[in-house]
Amino acid sequence: MDAAARKLWIMNAAALAAVSAALLLAVGTGMVSPYIQDVLISSLINIIMAVSLNLVCGLLGYLALGHAAFMGVGAYAAALVSIHWKVPLSFPLALLMGGVAAAVAGAAIGVPALRLKGDYLAIITLGFGEIVRIIMNNMPILGGARSLRGIPRVTTIPAAYAVVVVCVALMFTLGRSRHGRAILSIREDEVAAASCGIPATYYKILAFTLAAFFAGIAGGLYAHNMGVLNPNRFNFDRSIEYLVMVVLGGMGSITGAVIAAVVLTALPEILRPLSDYRMLIYSLALILMMLFRPDGLLGTAEFSLAGIAGRFRRGRGDGG
Amino acid sequence: MVDTLLEVNDLGIQFGGLAALERVAFGMEPGEIVGLIGPNGAGKTTVFNLITGIYPPTSGWISLDGKRLAGMGTRRIFQQGVARTFQNIRLFKKMSALDNARVAAHNQMTYNPLTGALRLPGYWREEADVTKRAMAMLEIFGLSEYARETASSLPYGRQRRLEIARALMSGPKLLLLDEPAAGMNPTETQSLMSTIRDVRDRFGVAILLIEHDMRLVMGICERLVVLDYGQVIARGAPGEIRRDERVVKAYLGGSAV
Image (cartoon, rainbow over all chains, first blue to last red; front, side):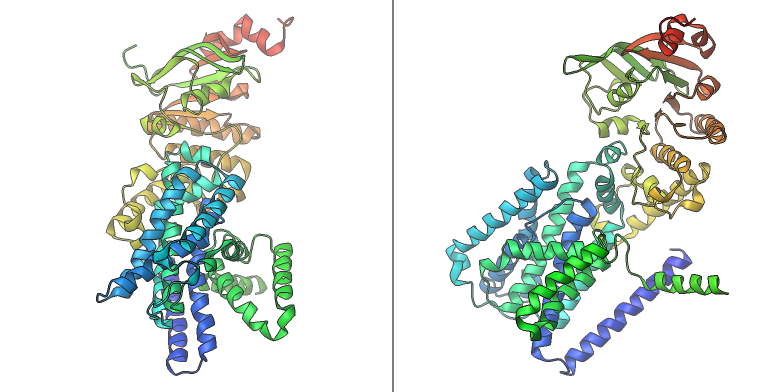
């Protein structure tokens, strides 16, 4: 690591520590109401969803409309582990199994679906999402439409926060490894990528499977937050919501996805006093956003403290 | 002719009923610079696409170092040591110049996704090594100060150079350049010529290039292969080709001298 990279790393670590401390302090001292805590947990879960979908939509550049289904697979798998398997450390184990189950589903759909592109892939993933939802609705072991009950409610804010930090960090570092570059190169130009020796099929499936894996972990967090699971929670509307987060944050930007996930989770709640006008304003905000910032909040760039500091320094240099 | 590097034999491809190439044959020695020339639509880029496996040939075969390439995919052929650039530059536009170069070194690294995500020692070791080599390559092409710029923000001439740098990252035996001087001004072309010669001397790579700029072609190619309507109409040293009647006719039209 050179000096600049080290400085960046220290600044980011310090920022992360500050945010963590503020959050944990606020929750620990009981300063935030249970309602706000609920919004916070939803935001944290949605962060994982948006950042993982960004692997497929942003890095690989493929449109996927079934992301909520992977969350559903993970949620049910994690819930079953928790309900039927009373072992120590069952919560982390449940989350991991949720991720693995979703990853298996992701690979199963990815292998045939990734031969297609663009709108065709979008329709296949859409269909897959509905199939998963209908299966979940009709499996007795999953409780079907009467919901799966009795899941231990062990998702706390500190736990969810820790999982989010680990997941986002892993996706970030992966994106900056040779594997992330390979996925990006396929998005940029598949022919050129192949003539640089990139195995395109492998990386398409890898991106898709990993996105599903992290969605499954988010599903596990969700299951252990709600305590009750209903298949209809993982429908097409939800997939679209996550897609909107990715697009709004800027395709390919992890920090953009994080910010968009938090804003879009909080916005409907903040607008709640406006009752009927709430969704109208929400939609209007999205339309305005797309008109004036079609590349999303951050485009493909990442938000960084060092970047802002650098801009300030350059600004001063120009002035003086 | 024991150490022939590239052998193209009886190569042909049909698109629908149209024979884009017919009985094309030529060879290349290691480290040789050969020009592939001919009027527009003669099938020059198609030859590149067949060598790199983008299309499978309808007839004939291609071998590299005695090994048949036909039937291998683009990626396998790349691994045999064939790298190329494209007529309409195909860089990874939104990636940095450095990352463009590093993508081409993908197969020289071995760490798995988990090692990459957890940044274990294997990641640091291999990345440091490849980054060093990529920076050295950018340096050769005068691009090291643009390493962090996105590829699409580079001026045209530098994008062409970056594409060559990227192609060389894999240490190929054969480099295919598709109109490297297209859109360059005479000064840029001049410096490109010396770069191409330099690349050959430094890396010992054989270079097959398609080019319309006759000054460049005559200046650096040791041999020329002339295509017209998908067939080889002449082969030889630049001096002979210049005087070849069929070549002059193909370029200037039927009645010209």
